[in-house]
Image 1: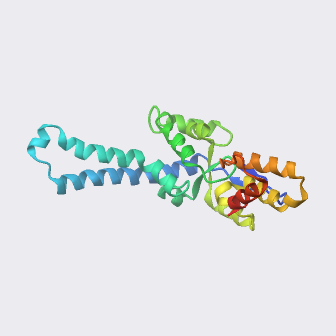
Image 2: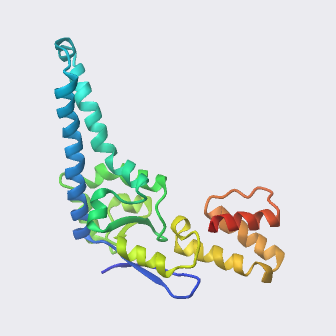
Length: 230
């Protein structure tokens, strides 16, 4: 089984098991039924309670009321819930899997959106044939959306254990194990490093996680570094 190996400041690598086709399919089937039921539930409720007028029916208004919200519920189910639930959906939670970035961190909203933009391609020509074939043929068991977004699907219990093993590292959930380890090591060795070296390292690390530094002083860089660790 493929694993995601993440180095930590302790020198002991953490391994997360990558979910294969079985885990993916199980989660997808559950999520498909949930979003299909949500869409059908809206259509049933609209017919039952909204009771569009005959005039609306002739003008096509009924199909707008029925179809547009149902289509939005169906198509936005994955991106909205994956962002809100930090890489999970109800189906993924039941299947015990979770989306992570390549460094083991919770994926960003941009990564999740890119991953879902490629969902129509993975679903070609039907029944997710392209996505399933790609997951079976690639070594880390990823579909095209994962390749584009830089994400993986891992077993959630392994990730939880990895985060527990990484304690007392702070900021792991937000930064990922590798970046949190680097930030913690830099903060711990701050006084032992030459000023020019620690400033350069801090600027590089902060830029890597998307934190602007501008003309920040050495003290301000240290404060930004500490804020990353929470």
